[in-house]
Structures are given as C-alpha cells and as structure tokens.
Image (cartoon, rainbow, N blue to C red; front, side, top):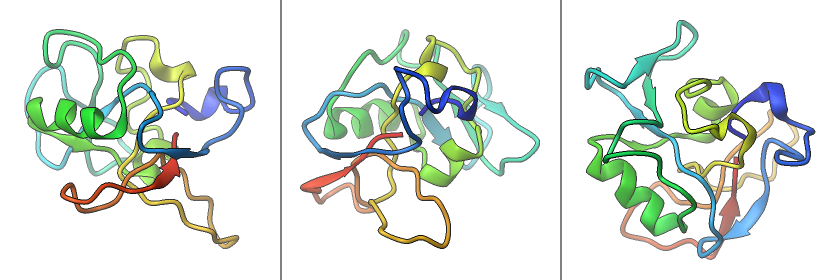
Length: 134
C-alpha cells in the first residue's frame, strides 16, 4: 500500500498481496542518492522517493517489468517492501497513498516481521512467477 495510513481500506486491504508479475499496479520509485526535485527524503528513511513529476507524470498502472523500467528511466529503482512500509514514498503524489504499489522485494513467508512487497525479484534480469503488491 502507498501509505500505512490507508492499510485496511477498500483500496489497500493489506500491506501486501501475492500477485503474478503481469498484474497491473501503481508505481513509486526510490533512489539511494539525491536526484534533486521531485525526489524527497523522509527523516526515517535512508532513500529518496518520488512518484509525481518523474518521466513526465504519474506511472498509471503497469506490470512488474514496466514498473522496473519506469523507475530505471527516472534514475531510480523500485522501492523495497520495507521502504514502502516505512512510508518513504508517502505523500509523493499521484494519489497513490491509497493504492497497491509494486516493490522490488520477493514475497517472504515469515512471521517474524511483516514483509511488504509486490511482485519482483532483486535481479532485474529475472522474471518472478509471483510476488506481492504493496
């Protein structure tokens, strides 16, 4: 989900979901370095996030491979589920706080800590069969 404030709503029933890589979801991007405007860094985060005004506008809904390319074209990458759960991209535009968002984290079946991630794998060259949406 694009913001922890909306988890449990109709648009964001949970932090994560298990989905196929062809499923369409919204995109928010992260960067490990400051790329200038419109990238923003939240105090609790070690990354900069952006949604609006990258690549000439909002992503709209994309499949996983398109989402990775969208962030790459903007100079960033897909955020990890941890970065999304920590609200590193909250409030960065396009109304995506209330939307399920792609992440780069593979789904993890653990009960120790919540894993929030849409469908992806760490390696951009591989195509996951299923993952999750944040």
